[in-house]
Structures are given as structure tokens and as C-alpha cells.
Length: 175
Ligand SMILES: CC(C)(COP(=O)(O)OP(=O)(O)OC[C@H]1O[C@@H](n2cnc3c(N)ncnc32)[C@H](O)[C@@H]1OP(=O)(O)O)[C@@H](O)C(=O)NCCC(=O)NCCS
Image (cartoon, rainbow, N blue to C red; front, side, top):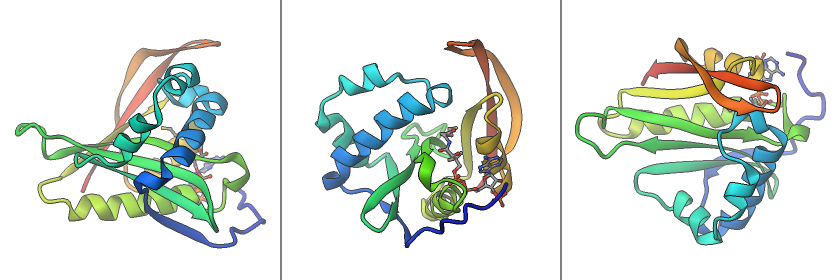
């Protein structure tokens, strides 16, 4: 990939706080709109959720939501969900990865994943991470491969898009 020559002023990755709920909501609604095929939710579905829904997503003891900041701008995010069930507590699910278009190819996606991997390694009992990517999303597939995820199968007809059904590639990685 060609690096973006407009380097980020400062790139900071940190867990989001309740006070970030409004800008997290705005970022994810943009994601569902502009990268529609990458997500199973629609902007309409999620816009209907109250701000408290987003705050709860941030303030969840069974997960963490990371933000990537350029100065004060929240320009990227990714989330990790843990499992409370005894038989699946060793697994955690990566979701909601998005970097605003104008900040792409600057390393924000990789910085988010690196921080997420470090957090997962610190969480007692978590041994496996998994995620899904829509078939054909080469940027995301390459990013995930570059931090150690491997594909192990594709769910056919996983989502309906304006261009027809698309599959979801399932990927996993040991912690
Ligand atoms: C996927 C996404 C998060 C990548 O974010 P990013 O900040 O641009 O990624 P980075 O700059 O950190 O790049 C890291 C690696 O990702 C891969 N990558 C990123 N953009 C790429 C592109 N356009 N084409 C091919 N590979 C790409 C490369 O392996 C890159 O490493 P390299 O620079 O050493 O080649 C971003 O494109 C995005 O938000 N896409 C829309 C939403 C989406 O698809 N989310 C994933 C849902 S599963």
C-alpha cells in the first residue's frame, strides 16, 4: 500500500470513555454509511439507538472500545468483546474497526490492532481472537493478516448488499 504522505499530527490510541459516546456514535454512523458492506448494521438501525446505548457499549465490563485520535479528532476505532460463558471465555471477538477516509494509510488501523492485541494479552484467560471480514475487503484482510490473523473459512451469503449477497471470511489468531 502507498503510504499517505499527510502524516498524522499525533496518533494516540486509548480506550474510549463515557464522555466519548457522542463522537463514537457519529463515527460509527459514518462507518455504517460510507463502508456499508463492511458492517452488518445499517445507519438507520443504529441511529435509532439512544446515546445511552453507545455509552453502554463503551462502558461494558465484557469488552473494550478503543479510539484512535489525531489531536482531538476521534478518527478511528475498534472494539473487543469478551465472553462471559465458561466454555467460551478463552475467546474474544474483534469488531467495529473503522478509520475515517482522510486518515487512512497512516498506520492508524495497525496502531488500533496493536493496542487491541496488547489488551487481549493482558486479559486473564483469553487465548483466541476471532473476527469476520466481508469478502473482497482487501484493505481489512491485509491489515488482519499483517497482525497474525488467519482465515479458516467463509460463510456464504453472509450479508445482503446493493450488489447482491457477499460472504464473510472468518479469521482467528492465538493470543
Ligand atoms: C481497513 C482499515 C481499518 C485500514 O485502516 P488504515 O488506517 O488505513 O490502515 P493502516 O494504515 O494502519 O495499514 C495497515 C495495513 O493494512 C493494510 N491496508 C490498509 N489499507 C490498505 C489498502 N487500501 N489496500 C491494501 N492493503 C491495505 C496493509 O497491510 C497495511 O500495511 P502496510 O502499510 O505495511 O502495507 C480502513 O481501510 C477502513 O476503515 N476501511 C473501512 C471499514 C472497514 O473495512 N473495516 C473493517 C471491517 S472488518
